[in-house]
Length: 112
Length: 115
Image (cartoon, rainbow over all chains, first blue to last red; front, side, top):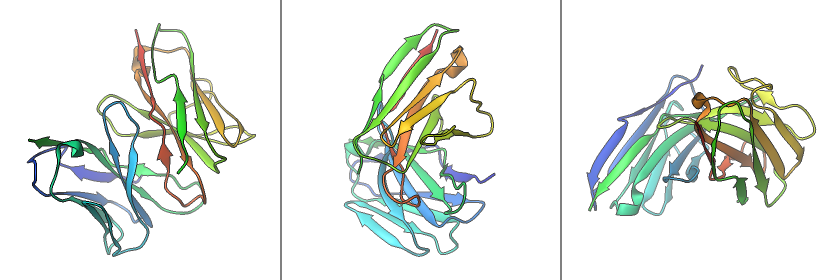
């Protein structure tokens, strides 16, 4: 079945630094989503991408839908302590019985 | 986006018992899903909750173990039956508020521990 690869499993950065996360797929999607999960909560949608090459921002977050439709990245600029959490990429291909496929997530730690 | 409420938020249960988790949405939604998130893992789809008909289960999940109801467009339940320690997980409800190709939004989950 479809798989999404997110690595590394954990990232440690200094407050104020920028960080980039990548997500790759073995097959194409026509929607890429990025979620963040804080401890004790459900995943919260950060950014949705619907078109190959699309670049979308949400505050300090920027995400891009790869041209090949098999990858996406998320950038966080000027990190702050509340950026700590697990970041999941997810891909979706519209169609009958289509399902959302999740990556394994990247745990981000921000050192003050 | 829709406000999704899950109950209970957490529970500790004895093995062999069953627990029903509720998911209530503040508006009618087209699609509702149930996921499992095992400790330190990603989200795995259990089933799609279909309004007025039987849920559609993913490979590895069966109705006898995870019966699901969806009596209307705002409410669904997931029952975890005959629980064992391996069922200790977070169970999450998600919804698609609008068209089927729109992103899913998640509730805060039910943290279940089985002793």
